Image 1 (cartoon, rainbow, N blue to C red):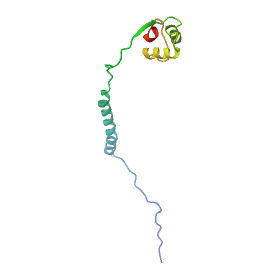
Image 2: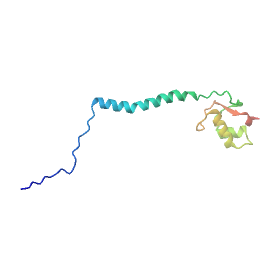
Image 3: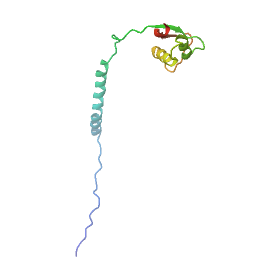
Length: 116
């Protein structure tokens, strides 16, 4: 008599189990490049400070914001012959205004090229 053996169709694999030490080693391997990257950014990033030594001085006059004033109305008063969009842009960038919100009593710097 002959016997027929049935071979398993799939290979039975073992399950990978991480030990506590293995997890620590894996964590260290992942964290080391990140730590070096942060350290490099901290050391190399501080060298690009702006000193302003070679910057041209900006001359300006100030205007007090009155109730009902807008950047558009102030631009029309200080430079009636210029394009108000350019004047508003220059006033906003000189005074670091975002959104064009003005406070009553605030002093705005106006570039002298518009006040001459």
